[in-house]
Amino acid sequence: MFSNINGTFQVISIKEKFIEVRNIYNLKFILKKNYDLHLYQLINVNGYLQYSDNIYYIDKPSIVYINNFDVRFYIFKFFSSFKNYKEIVIPITFGYTYSKSTLFENANNIGILHFLIISGLHFNLLNNILKKIFKNKKKLIKAILFLFWILTVWSISSNRAILQKILPNKIKNQKIQKETKLLYISVVCLVLHNSLNVGIGYFISFTLSYLFLFFNQKFKIKEKILFMIFLWIISNLFLVINNKSINILSLFINFFLSIFFECFIIMFLVLFWFPFASYFLSDLLYDLVDFLSYFIIHIKIDFLYSKEIFSCVLYGKTMFIMFYYKNNI
Image 1 (cartoon, helix red, strand yellow):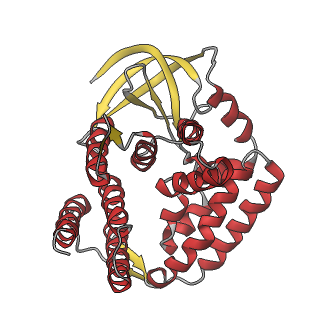
Image 2: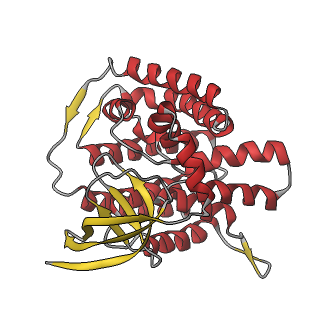
């Protein structure tokens, strides 16, 4: 069933075979063909609307460019003209992927893709850098983090991370527990991302966030070690559920690799505005991931019927164990 559609849209995602746009009501639509457009470009579209599998498609669109005052449009238009930026630097730093990437395909096969995609890790690392530079200027740090979020893809992880950083810890001099604050944020993200389409990313993001909050409490060394093992198991279970396969070697090297990738992310965040330095870093990262791709021992796990159901169960079980242990120590 087709109907006419005419309106103003903003480009929010560019893939190899389609483009995602949104209107002023934040409703998302898909242009089936990849046109010569850029992120955050404003366009007027006249075409035929098709609805399938909870997705709106605009078929046979007539596109007219509109003057744009969004700074993000000019930033990404300029930097995406560099090949390394388009394929590596922008996806890692801000989360936008333009097409299939050998780097990300290899990272996925190795089991380290979660280190490269935009997440709370980016915000935590940037927050730590800013604290070193600006010391106790909390408002300035929050402002810079907010500006960084404006530039990133608005995923569940990035939205959770920015809300954790900028929302107050006190209301009318009454302290809010971190777990309670995260619970409120989880509800907000559920609403923002449509509760029917949150997917596995929602459960991964908030389960690990709760666990990290729990881990940061004052436990004895033995309890810390046991909890690190528990966190390691949960993280890998989510990887198995998401991919229905796993690289055995990644189970044992991820902890050590995380240090390297944290260094890469920090350098990309700091040196993004310097193309020559970023070119060197992206080539170095590509060579590292390519080298690791030769050490893959894959085991397929295809007995999981619904990864969303298993993720939800794992989320619930993790929360129960965590709060039970917290209230009984």
